[in-house]
Amino acid sequence: MVQLIVGNKGKGKTKQLLDKVNTEIKDISGNIVYLDKSTKHMYELNNKVRLIDVSQYDITDSSAFVGFVCGIISQDHDLQQMYFDSFLKIAALEDQDITATIQKLEEVSKKFNVDFVLSVSMDESDLPAAVKDKILVAL
Image 1 (tube, rainbow, N blue to C red):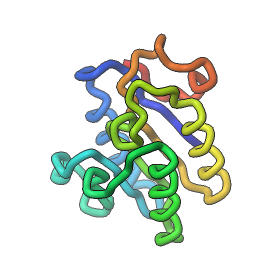
Image 2 (cartoon, one colour; image 1 turned 180 degrees about the vertical axis):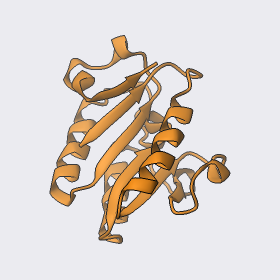
Image 3 (cartoon, helix red, strand yellow; image 1 turned 90 degrees about the vertical axis):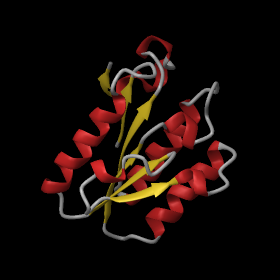
Image 4 (cartoon, helix red, strand yellow; image 1 turned 30 degrees about the vertical axis):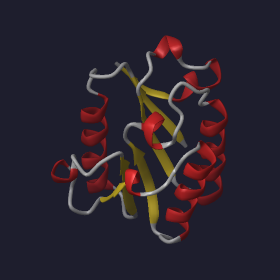
């Protein structure tokens, strides 16, 4: 399952994402990974959540990002959820159509039984119609 937290920059998406991940860690039996563009939120995350600073890796397009995500999944058979903060930036999708990448993540989610929650810096009205049904929170 892929879920989106959407809203323009500065609307509080990261806080929503952090609250959700810190709530979920108490209730699930598997592992959680949090991908971000820096380690800035390290101390706001529960210590059981694995934070990965994506900026340390040379991800230049969305295909490389999906491959990176699959690599993480392949190394952790207990992985249940992944959270992507600043999704457009870490997936190299700024000013691009996100539909194909979201579809690919949906396929990966179904195949490996891992849920994804993405923070997307776009207004709900600017999202492609194909992904609007995945909105969890619109700010």
